Length: 227
Ligand code: HEC
Ligand code: HEC
Image 1 (tube, rainbow, N blue to C red):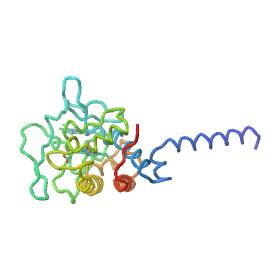
Image 2: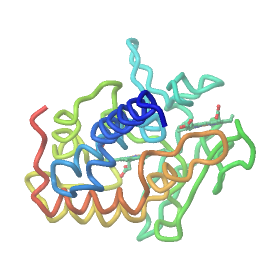
Image 3: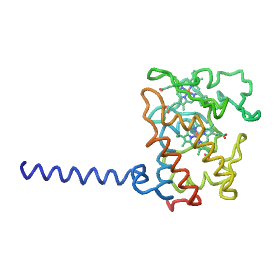
Image 4: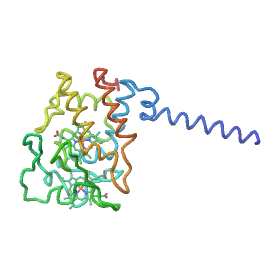
């Protein structure tokens, strides 16, 4: 091999090593601790597979889901007016009757088998918890910092919904139970992010590593990054 080839190979290795160092998932895999864990959770949450369904509130207050890698508005002017509204009956989630075309009119229990078809997922662990969007204060805005996301998740006023009181920095026992045992481990919509059907990029890493990162972060007391 000529010297120039060694030279190119050397810089190739240096470049790929620095690309790995910048990837939060790889950093968490190499050295799992509360800091790398939350950086990875942030990387997952801002990915379109998670952020699309959490939606966008535009200037005139309309709240709607987005689709695709570029997070464009959902086709057919779908907004929160089309949302499935759930309530809890024991351990089962039931739907408030709705007359409008709801998410369930298109989003079934499994992913459509061709590109462009509506995705879907359910889980026997959360019966009746079907495809729907959360409340508007749970949006994951483009460019949200890890610090802001962390504080949002730990704010008991912000992260609790009519379905679940998730606790927060004032009640870490409830937070652990809801965030780790429910949301990370058995929620079919979070699970879907890692198995999103044909033509969509999955959320970074794996579902098992996502669950592990939530655990590492919470077990360390759920510290927030400085930025
Ligand atoms: C199909 C829609 C959908 C998708 C996809 C989805 N979510 Fe959610 N998410 C929801 C709903 C609905 C709630 C509110 C549940 C409730 O009311 O208890 C929620 C709540 C949350 C919460 C707690 C609320 C908060 O902001 O404090 C977190 C964290 C969360 N989701 C993370 C994720 C992550 C991470 C992914 C991707 C791996 C994801 N979600 C994908 C619908 C979705
Ligand atoms: C009339 C049918 C229809 C209705 C009703 C509908 N959707 Fe969709 N949805 C689709 C189709 C089709 C796609 C796939 C679009 C694509 O991949 O380009 C889609 C894709 C999505 C995605 C994008 C997944 C991704 O990451 O790219 C989200 C999120 C979503 N829908 C949420 C909702 C929510 C929440 C509701 C109810 C408020 C809803 N949809 C109502 C047909 C529908």
